[in-house]
Length: 448
Image (cartoon, rainbow, N blue to C red; front, side, top):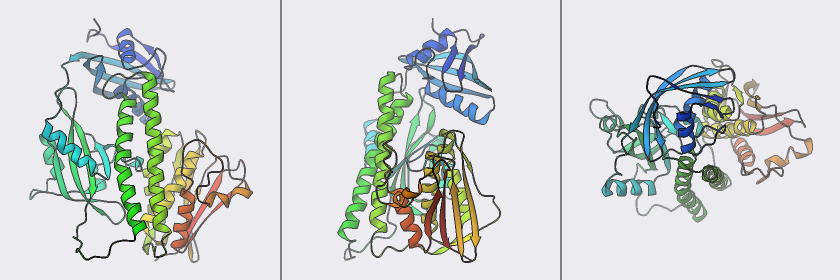
């Protein structure tokens, strides 16, 4: 019999690399049925995510999970205790679960598929309405409340539609929401409930599509052909790529049951390629926008310190995944500049992302904000491999990646960032040397 007595805990241990180095027989069997091997990476996705959380927070965690066990599921109560050399596991309450409920009816499937076809973004949230799977280009949104990303419609009692629907695990629509990006994007949200193996609400998949709050008259002047093509092409590609990435991640995480290790590896490669293509699509559409003769960023007063703190928060998870620490500027000392907030944040996210990518494990990416006379500046530094003097102008060329062939980056980020900086009356430059790290200086006119 696979299920152990609930009186005696099942023990195991995961080391600092995520390898299951010790396991009682029931835990080892569960691990192997999820596609793992003895002494290999922990293959039970729900348990592996808790191990990472306990290691990151350095606290003991006790929680119920439901894991796949062959064709059935098991209900487990797990206690995870972090130590210097890994995380100790103690599992009790090992109970076989009934089979998963049948799939939704045909009308619900059609409604979901129709909403997906028109979605610009796909976000998943847990039962507490916090983001668990953000869009590919917003990794830092993980853990945030959905109400920090959207202004949602409310009834006369002040209850949002998503909160009302969650009480009964029902799907919902919000046709008057606003995505809080830049100055705000009017959107429609279709919410698909996610049900776990015991019929309990596990969260929602939010299918988000842009909407135009003002109906355009039939005689309005159409946008230039190249602009319309780029916008439509970007939208047409983002939806399928978001779905490819989401499904590949689900296969890799083995959320729906055991998967062979090589297939899980293929899925990880597919998700990585999808994210690369998605970033390239975004960069190409952005490139088309900023190179138009009439392109003009907004001009407003922006606190660079607040913007830097925002960028550091958005990229915190990415930095942790690369074992890199972000050292943001001290808060409470504003440095005001004149520019377009959304574009300044875009440049800063690109600079910090590059710094994370080029930093060694254990490295620090630091951000500082300064003001000198009529110039305000953000400086982003790292302790990476540095850039030779003869390459310091080349890195700002289009599609220039200095011969890197690791499949990351489009070679457009720094070109776009410098174009944006100069369009706002500032500049972007680099100070570096081989083995000395890099310091990117992003300047703007001083604000009030």
